[in-house]
Length: 121
Image 1 (cartoon, rainbow, N blue to C red):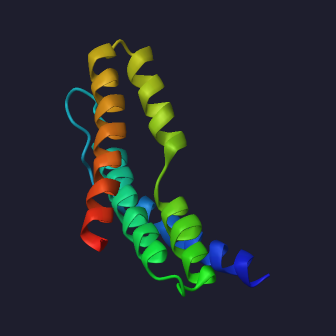
Image 2 (image 1 turned 180 degrees about the vertical axis):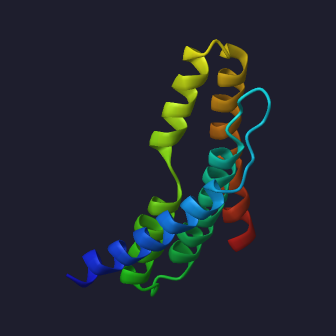
């Protein structure tokens, strides 16, 4: 039960954080969803830091790891919104912006994890 509570609390905090960042007006003229992009890159970097730290420290508290990774980062990041925004860009004829958004989101998020791991090692 303590694991479920850890994930629930972390998820709540992460979701509220995402909501608050989403309130900041950052939409670009070409429709590029900058808010979601920034949220997902930050989330990727943070989950990379947490994962690398947990791997390095075998005594890392498993409930804390669940709170941070599954809860906080899971509630903060948003693959479903990323997918919907990509679809909406395609539907509205912004093919190039959609492709750029998809490629940048995946590439920069992966690079953020690589950077996080390299900082912890």
